[in-house]
Length: 407
Image (cartoon, rainbow, N blue to C red; front, side):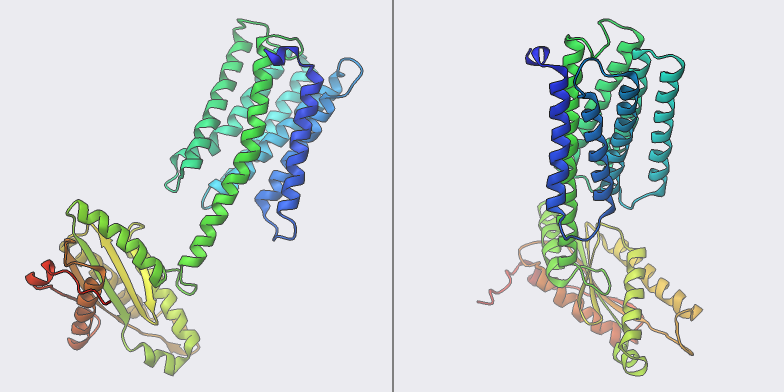
């Protein structure tokens, strides 16, 4: 194998250069961009790893024990910081418990390694400590990327590769406890070769993976900004219709019902005229918060414009949709009865009206027709006294007729 013939210090120099070039690329990529803590932590990690391999590549004979110990301590700090930076990206929302976990693990692993050097300077013990620490560093991001609801193909692949590396480290730990071959990186052999291959894999996966995962997150954040209403956080009309159309096609294939709900604030113009548009915006934000409390993540919530909002509930039967709508009305009524939303000396009271329709998608059941039927039901709720929900119906012939082509 080629690595058996490669000088060990040459490998260390290549590893050091790999991390150094990563720092240079990150510096160029992030030039003049806003500060990002995850990138700052990752940058510090790459600096530590560059120093690690540079220390081990010192020429002229065997590396002194003091230098070897310093290199491994800096290595543990670098791997800990690198996985912490990755966790800041893949963990949503970011948990302070994660910071505590990595802080304690970094301190404990470095302390254990230093004690091992001072009390019993045995290479197998040092390998055991470093391998165990790195495995514990890798496991949280691996499990998070595999188990997250927002996982992508990239995150799943990275998660399993991290698990594979953790498994390899556990095998390395087993070899220190039950040596079947010489456990040393200082002599050519299978163990040294596998160790160098693992180091290159960790470096490549860590560097490329972090950049790709952070880019994926940035793309997702940009899409969110482009698809969301700034004031309420609801989907804008275009994004709502796109997502609703996709879910509706899926329900049509499986003959599942869908529910379309339109809602708006009763006499919203009066609130704006009496208290100003800032108060009106506050009311809209509070209403959006109540909607999110009542409806789940899969149920789409969008703002059509002004004070008009829409909800699309895939696979929702009438009884389920009615219970959800009544639950939202109760939330608004409870807030109104408490009168806890005040602006200056005035208590702001508001109610909402809702129009809804439930149908199984078919040839004549389009989003536009659902919207029109829900809109008619909404006006029915207004006519009946507001502060309520009304249910619309479609005639049997409408469900079969293709919707006229506007062109």
